[in-house]
Length: 457
Image 1 (spheres, one colour):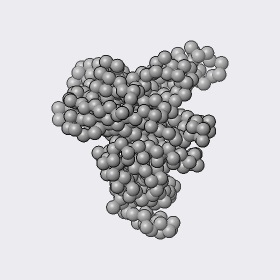
Image 2 (tube, helix red, strand yellow; image 1 turned 90 degrees about the vertical axis):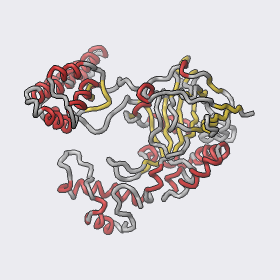
Image 3 (cartoon, rainbow, N blue to C red; image 1 turned 30 degrees about the horizontal axis):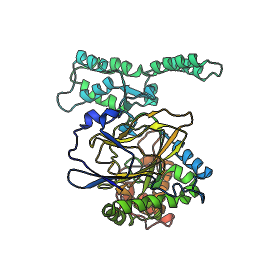
Image 4 (cartoon, helix red, strand yellow; image 1 turned 60 degrees about the vertical axis):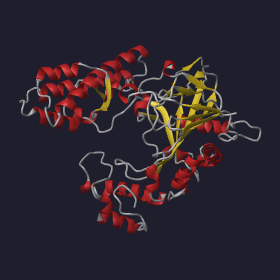
């Protein structure tokens, strides 16, 4: 018997207040442990939850047990990437790698000091803003540039670093040395501020702030680090303008390919529980240019795999428009908690091994309650199956690899096209309509690959 749950009202959870916050039990009214269909106030079926629905999970052997080899594979996958690119899901308050970050007060200074209108130029106000919040921000700075510009004492940093590296250093001494080294590294901002911004006239302070932000602040924010990996396909981005299979997918391809029964069982459950949604997604993603892009013929393109990663409130922003995600877990040891919760609906789901959740992880804020009462070997490996719209616009994998190879070729042979940065990746404006790209394709017998800057036509 499947329980029908009608949501009468969507609770207000403003993004500014909720995103990045850790879920609490008081945020929800009920946690489901049984089969449930959840309907929104509009009458739309938004979530289905099925207990024990996965019968050949991961897959099982003839005796119905998870094979040790496959269990080890998924453990390896879930730990193969320690990432700082999970944004709000990794928590609002930054606790990892403070030595590579500006503070929230410093970042606020840059935001206000570089405004197009009414930019901050008053010295005392600037000092107050900088001192207002010393917590680490997601925004990071270019360590090599502040060192090259003499904004830190390299001898002091090396002194503390030598103590950290010395094998005979005790744990307590090592932590103290790390803290002192980090303080020395983070002096760069105050040195720049006092040397460049303070002496500038009020008329020039905006320009000085803009120049400082452009030179020293990176363009890629970094969240807290967590064990969260991706298998399957990643689409093109502005920074990496070629589609690709993820590194972990390629490293152990045979095992990734051998798990097709698992992918197709998840796919079949989507088809069974949300047939209308499945029909739309299947039509859209059956037309990808390469069978490896959609997990060998499913309505999904990508899997995120987390290991003991309690996610904070977030939305899955990269998912396909109007799509759904499917969630299941692999367990080890004993634990309680880690319920999957939706504060806007006031409900949560106790997803254990064999269960499957299918629902809207994009439109609805969601997160996980804390792990508790766990054994030493407790492990929650969570699988999130989803779709990325841009993958439907990619060319086949050979053409995407050709784009990658062209960028590597450019780094070596087309340095005059570069930005002058020591780690130039080989991309430049107009590269995909350039004579060099056409010549590269011809030489590699890949003329069929398109001349597109970003999207495929």
